[in-house]
Image (cartoon, rainbow, N blue to C red; front, side, top):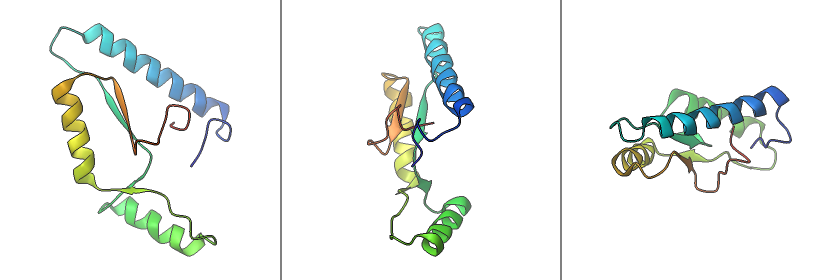
Length: 104
């Protein structure tokens, strides 16, 4: 998985700018009934065309049998719904081991 150290500088800056904007937007909308939040997904999504294509490519190219994480879209829907209903956080990372330092 890419880290800040392995990404081009513009990608790192874009990620930081996006997070800053999201936090500002969330604060600006507080109390209006409108929620701004994001779910950062650091995995392929199961049962998706891109997820299946990525899995096939990894199987063909992975010499050490390492696998990119795959998440169930139903689990992602539950995370989104939980964020929307509770509105107690601006961002959430999935899988939970994903952090702002490794997410872009």
